[in-house]
Length: 307
Image 1 (cartoon, one colour):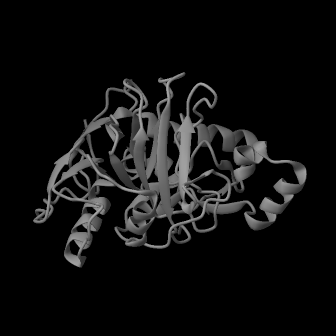
Image 2: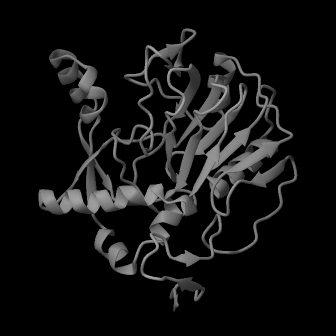
């Protein structure tokens, strides 16, 4: 047994487990949070994910309710709402309460509302989202959050999982944290979205979205927590490291999202809405429903440059 110098709380490590056993909490400081007065909140795991009841996202959200929902988002990183009736315009307008909705440069849109992306999968369009990632980290200012709603879901399968990248960073060995603090990694869309573009369109989009370096460990701009910020879809290499060392280190860091201790999982129903903090999480959409249909709609909200 060891103790962490920051908290003096015990950490149990048998030398074999992928994640040492330790106390987990949503904020990292182990202090009780203030109660929520305007809705009921049920945590889905010790660190990430909470189901909200008593809120109609199609109706007006006053400033007090908005503030309390935002506090819950910062604390739990992803919020789930059941039985919501949102049109594409209302979906976009809901996102506007948190910032400017993005018009995604590559994904198809829904119902002529350019800010709403439609992700339609089935027999003719197999799923490709079954890899841990954060949305659009290839951008200079990646999204602060994403709001996803279920339009049509299979009878079984198609769950989405989220991982708490602050808890993942906190769980790294001290030597690894020391090694990666201060490093930057290059993020690039060409290894994913770029594969579907012709040479001329690829060149045009590369001018608009050139490869960008972000900190391997970013600081959350609102909570101040340190977060792992690399992902398999968009991260290309770590600056200043030999290629083999960069690949080895990134592979280890990518795998931190795969530990169940840092995860929550959502079983979708039509009308379910998930709102996640894209700065603090990665997510993974299970592709276990092929050839059945799964249709989702998503709005991403513009963020700021990671630091």
